[in-house]
Image 1 (cartoon, rainbow, N blue to C red):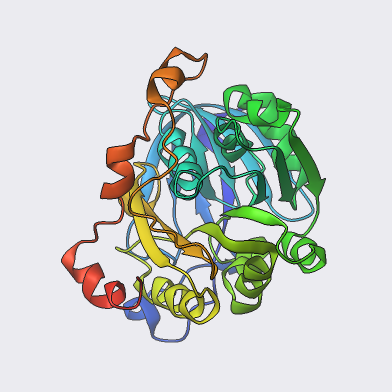
Image 2 (image 1 turned 30 degrees about the horizontal axis):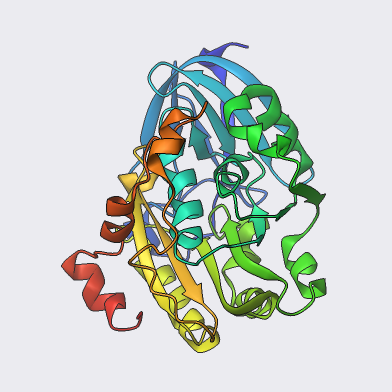
Length: 328
């Protein structure tokens, strides 16, 4: 497939008149068009107005449209293979470890002996791969809405999708919001929400009723970790998430972050919450991964360690002023 002539679609929210200093995104059936500058992929969206991150495209490996979203995989010149959903980078082979390891181990290393874990989203299998490192875990459920994401990940990202091979994993293709409503109260020790941005299929995963369903599905002292956007770009969204979680989760509520070079602004945040019950102090891991054993394994840890776990909760001053007092 010719990388010189690729056009991909990127989701947008229709902008109000006068936004972006008068600049308007081209809207086609609810999606804004972005195009690959000859030989390059550029991620353009009003969720990060006025900027774009570009990667050089060596070869387009896959393009398809599922019932929910546009899916693309291409070989980049510097970050390996890249997975795109609706025009937004989901992972690259080079830096996926920074996201997958942190969203998984920040919650699971904060409680002793997690046994039952639910993953919402995460169809690439990376979170499953990381959860599987925890020997105490007996059951891993995953609910992913888009089967194409699972199939494409298994084909093009086997080192990420290897998580699906763990016998403890049960895959359910369907709506995670609907699935959670049917889960018996107190079922899980941890729920990890690996969602895309709050547009399209993932929008409900950022709303208060969803967080209420997560809290109900957790046992006392159970933990949730959800993708929570960038402090450089989405402070209003983050404030809303923090406010909702403070009302719902009666244990701890904390915001953490990590660096991911190919995500907008080069970072991504996580909301970590616990239900009332045994006290959870997310900042100090009580269930550390044996790093020596991990380094001996076929797939050693690349990013996470106990020191970076604690450091992830240190907020820059501007973010601390906004959300630090609302979290605890």
